[in-house]
Image (cartoon, rainbow, N blue to C red; front, side, top):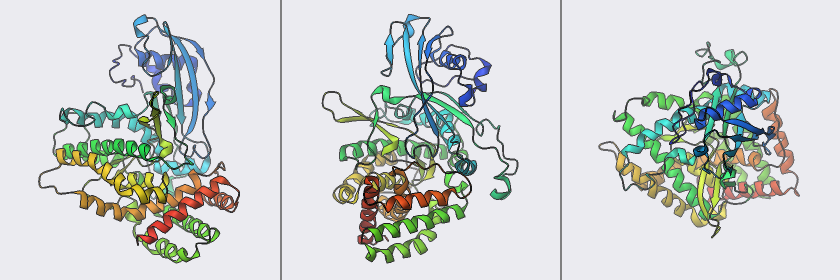
Amino acid sequence: MGECMDMGDNQSSYQPLVGLQDIKEMVHLTQDSVRDILRCSTGDPDLTIIDMGGLEDMSGTNDAFNSSICSLEVTVKFNREEKVSDTGGEDVKKDQKTFHFVIKSPPKASFIKMIHKMTKPFLNEVTWYLELLGQVSLVDPFLPSSFPGRTIPLSAQCPIVYHAHSNYYSGEAANSCAGCPWFCWLSVRQAERGLLVMENVKKRGFVMFDKMKVLPLDHLMLALTNLAHFHGRWLAYRWLGEAGKLPEGSWSVDKFKRTLDTQKRVPKFIYKQLLNGTHKTVRRILQLEGKEELIENVDKFYNVTAIQQLDNFMGAVTTQIDTCLHGDFWSNNIMYKYDEVTGSVSDTILVDFQLINYGHPAYDLLYILYISTDSQMRGQHMDQAMSHYWDTLSLYIKEFKPEHFKYDLSDFQADIDTYKTIGFVLATTLLPNVLSQTQVEPGGLLALRDMQRKQAAELEDSTNEASKEIKRRVVGLVEELVRDKVI
């Protein structure tokens, strides 16, 4: 990290200090290092810090599984008055400006650190900002002038990042035993370490929707439009790369796919452990809610179907429109902005790219539909939502598809039906955790079992509002998929 982050149109003339590459962890965020990060990103070599606050924890309940998150405010004085501009809602006064940062670093809990040695989510996010956004921007010149969303690059849907470091990205945690079984090197390999310094998009008017509420239709439709552009740009990138049409500096298709192999990094036995715990949780929810007649379907699904489809979940099965996926696409990772006059939702920002992976778009689609909506909303708007998403994605397919390629709405709908079982596993595994009001802080080798015990205890509490909502959504999903003969 000896170079400035690419700030888009803000081309920096400042020559960064070699020391920027040594800003690797939270402890390195001194006033001098923050000053040099900002000198680099603004191009003002004489920028000075007037005031720098302390780091404040931002990690909400169960939101710190993939990262530790803090906020930081820094007020600076520019040397040149022309540098003063209100580019994102930051506080501006003459030649001064207050930067509002979100600081992310890998979590500290021992069990999570161990799992991250395999899944490397912090590396994923650093790679997203340092390289992948630049790679997908190579598609922009190929978009026709009348193409919807052409003038909005994918980077505009993400927070600005001022500094990023990962010990896995830099090669400081190289795995010399990579060819050996995972259980041989897991204990000796360095854990993820790193740092992301990014803007706090709340200061630009973006807010998070209440995860305990069902996502309204207008919010869902806007999110799906932007998701279709997300998937479509990467699908175009893949096809242009396979045709050898991308310019110099583009990745090979193999490198692109290897970078997104998140799911394949996890041993199957861990997935089977998760399936076993989820099976017990869903069974207990059905018992508590007096829905025992559904248990036979659930038992058969988790004992047979889910195991059979494990390879599909881990990315071993490919489809014609496989692309880069967000991997954690639900309401808590979508920031919304509202029109000041009408109050209607007008824009989104995506956050948390730690679970990016490669696969069919249905993964992200069903993720949000099964986690952030309920059976009633899906019953009324499922077909509408799918058609809305397809209307945008199909534009990319029509424009960039390879010769003799055939994939239409009926193929897409068939793939959606296939992936519903995967969506069901994801939703029933995640809902008891992400909607829980009990802070889970796992540690040690028995952490997974401990987490499941805490979730089970919360579900037994009939007065707990979060527990009521978890059970309502899970029961609704089971009834829906049993009705549709999916499980």
